[in-house]
Length: 489
Image 1 (cartoon, rainbow, N blue to C red):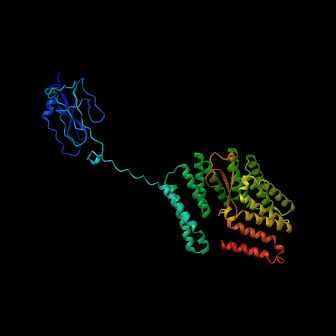
Image 2: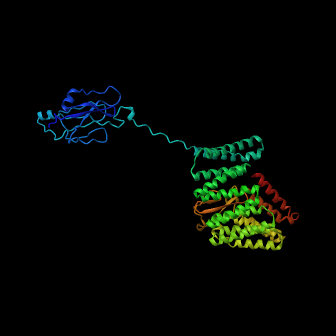
Image 3: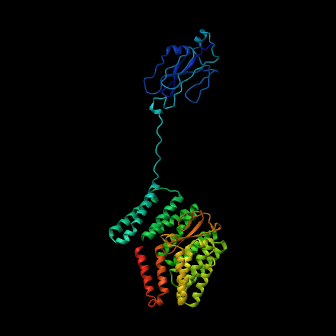
């Protein structure tokens, strides 16, 4: 059967769809009886494609129609008009024979494919849209705004204290309430990642505890945060929240707070999170020292011995030194008897034996605190001659450790902890922090920087008060210098 007499069902590609023209006719008659002109409507031009309905039927491609491989024809090609893309080329077998060209063994046609390039297409539908801007991260925006409001409020804190005006106080608390409102909106209206939600709840409860009296809301926020941390095993955030929760509970019921801390220490010892054992034992000491009963003093001494033994077992000499200095303070606080003073001096001697250790030598707070406690032991024993010697040693220590360089504004200092005591989840802020060398440290709060020299003036004045009249009122002069220093600060 020749190609001219072969019947082809006619299919037209119009407006993105293949449609049958309804009927069968030969390729030659179909081309001769149809006028291919550009379509007047929007879209592609009127295009035609034909394929054989027999065993030589070509395979259809996945794009828009049949695709044939053929040698290009230099003459007698009948391109269909098209607005974009590759034109339809259907060779006419009869004309190739008349010009002596060899007819292909198979019927061939090239169907036009619309171009997807925006530069070649004039249809706006094929133009690539500009990349859309990423959506705003509203939780991060609100958290940043809250921190800005907190910073603005704290920058006006000194002005509120000095001016003592209601107007400045209202501005201060307005900034705080706005920042707390931003954090509250984040917690109520957005679904956060567990770690992010735990951090936001901790920050929210911390501001409520430090700046307001809404301890109930702070306790509720911490309770929800602890449940989230336990569900997702965020141990570091959980212990930070429990640490703050114990301080909040102490406001209402001190005994309940101490019991809560004791239970937490037992859990920490079971999990062997040694760094947090140190933190909660120090917290237990600070809470018990606020209670003045003899039973509480004995409990403090017991906690100090447990803390020292744990730190010695893991090689944390800085923690051992801090425990020894605190033990001497407890003995001085308990009684002024000779036995208590002797126990305090023995604890100080144990702390001084570690002064060459790098963890102790790099902390000037240990040296200054040791000199203060040593002078207090001498004053309580009423040894005036040794008191003057201890006073001079204390002043030398303060000169070797300049206060503006050795102390932070809030009086906090860090004790390094060896790598063997790091818990599985180390902290970067809060009670446990990482220093510049990525070593874990525990943060302790002591006397603020501006009060260190004032305390030195006070102790020096007490040490030479017995000879004030014979020494040209030197003791009173030291007291005046201390007061002038505090007023200048």
